[in-house]
Length: 350
Image 1 (tube, rainbow, N blue to C red):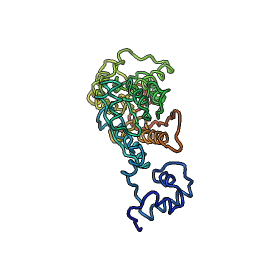
Image 2 (cartoon, helix red, strand yellow):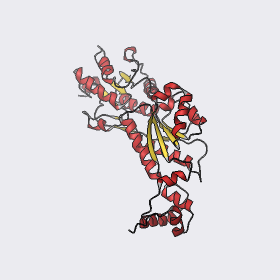
Image 3 (cartoon, rainbow, N blue to C red):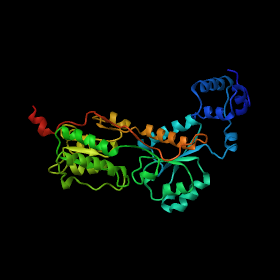
Image 4 (tube, rainbow, N blue to C red):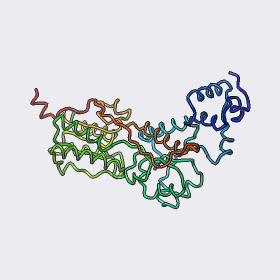
């Protein structure tokens, strides 16, 4: 490959006998160029070793070529890491840089502080993830700034937002039905945190499955959601040491479910012989824990990537998408080894 130094976008356009705008669309992997012409330009780019000049690119436009992933706080939690992988993948493909911006302090100061914060460094667009997408006034401030944004899994105010989501209610309904079909009648729900709106949807799915099966949840099984994540072990232990304990635990995420498995062992119980446990997310640890966890696979990385692709379509100056884009991705029930019929039924079948 012969690399041509200082080759500009205009130089490449002349060689390809197309406009500089067409070259830009191919370089940035944007739509609007035919497959044959795109292949010809990509071949020319490879042959010449052309590399876009980021500084010139920014100066030549009003863009910063940055996308901001808005999170509440810095975290290494699997959910946010997976979202970041998907968002980053879409950004790299389109020639954008990704910034991860924690906004807990800004949220506490109100709408004006939010507006000042993002006006200061002005990203081209934002991917707003839970629980920030539920924060009062946050997306209103972005709208007033005319900053494009797409939300991941919002619950409140969905009609006024572009978003990508999964059906949390239906997924939890399905995994609860799985336990009911095994013969469980004494089921308990374990939430992750009262601060996550998605937990309300998941609990609704759990309760709908119980209602349809004619099961009344016992009052002593109804524990209030913890103020913060990370209390799954103690909540499960409290339930599993009741004189008349539940035979199945439906957990708001995999971390709570794995804490529940540990709580069962602490209480002298064996999963799934004595108690069945299910989770939500299909995190890597859910497959490697013992026993491997039955859970809901949530395509988190794909949600982040798709949300970013939607945002980039809205940012496309030549063929911008107008109006709202609202999409739902598919989940899957992953059967592993933490569910079985309750002991009373298992004994009868012997």
